Length: 247
Image (tube, rainbow, N blue to C red; front, side, top):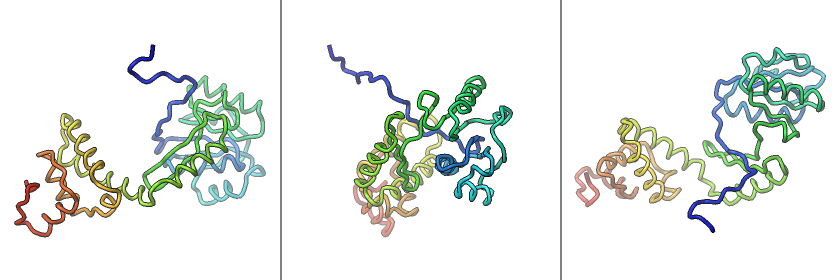
């Protein structure tokens, strides 16, 4: 009998936005796959150490090293490289060496991704669409990276052109709201009010909101009302406006 709650579908991954800012990430290898991993991790503001013989570096990895975007060790992996590391990414054409690194990571309880070996991955890299603060990831749980890329492009093609800017403005408004209502017990009301703003305002409205608009809009938080952007700007232009939305 079908229950009232979502049915469980095993075999998936828990997709998270993993905050690794200022964490130490070890990348073993210096080829094309390593280059892609490095970009992903640098975009997350982590600190990277690359371990690879110099003759194995591709042009992009060599560039990252030259620009001092990553720390570099010119040799093959050694177990001591795991000291002080929060995450390990391997991208070398040596299955035996990769498996050994994974076993060491398991012993030290360090999250690891072994390129092209799904059973030896604590997490997977998906295909990511990025537009400012907006990130959308498509994962096939290691079954078809190329297909994930195709699906991601189709999703991105259907998104409004200004979605990233709208997300950025909502983030600014939320930060301002936390200053207006900082108490923990205000949490549910903050979430409900922000939800109403996102539902009632179009993406164009959100993108065009100025800081002055936001400050005026926040004046409606306490009574729990959400006027239109037009009404907000009317009040900005005429302090004597006494329409039904005025506080």
